[in-house]
Length: 208
Length: 167
Image (cartoon, rainbow over all chains, first blue to last red; front, side, top):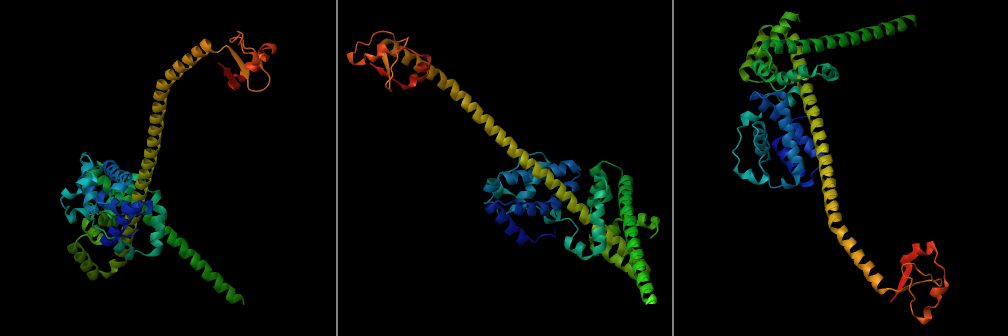
């Protein structure tokens, strides 16, 4: 899913608080999942804590969706709720939203831009990677996500996952090597099929 | 690309920063390197595409998996709420039964006692009449002489609800 612009998200938030639909909820969730993960991992919280905190915040939003209409600065509200969850404080109610301090934008934005990523990829590789990313172990996939999507440093990933930096290097190297060899094999197969077809055509016209 | 080079590139934070466009300095530095060594361009572009694709799909997978967990939490919340409501109504109905039952029993006893004291004979609403063993005395009404002629049958006792007391 592409990253949403501020105005689009504002519209979706309004629609969610008015109609309380799940589609809007999912859009907001997908958008904020990466932001909040980035913030959590940057503060060296483990994967489980970050994921649980995200889900706690969104569970609260879902259960209290009818009372969210007066929340205009939803962005600050979501981020502040998440930070409070991370530090095991109570989630603030929608009526307390006026007192929130603005969260610095630099803390909210992961470095990577989806649009740029999608522009920079060719179709075949996307498809192959999409098919094979599920074959990676969960831990391996999470490190790939932290490194190649959120852009965390190796040291941050090592602390977050409670492993050494060398383990992070090796895990990511193995993951990329596995995918690279799979892509090479598949591309070789396509090439062989293409050559085979060309030879068949050539033979067919020779006989005629 | 040689394995050693690939390994070195992946360990190099500036290369990842270049792929993710993380900071301008790393981007321009790597672009200059590619300009100076154009033969490396294909391999580097290939690796860059792979890095971006892996990040994107791993990110989508992570978000979707966590959303599934959230959906389960929401469903579980509904089930728990439903269970809580059911048990709440269970308690309410039990409490109501505890209060209402004694009242009903007391009322029934009072009614029975008053019947014992005041009713002397019964007559069925249909034409057949029966003498009830609990109300065995003579009614003393001349127009109710049929009461004495009918024999008491057990099935008549079942239809006591249809009785009309003769006061």
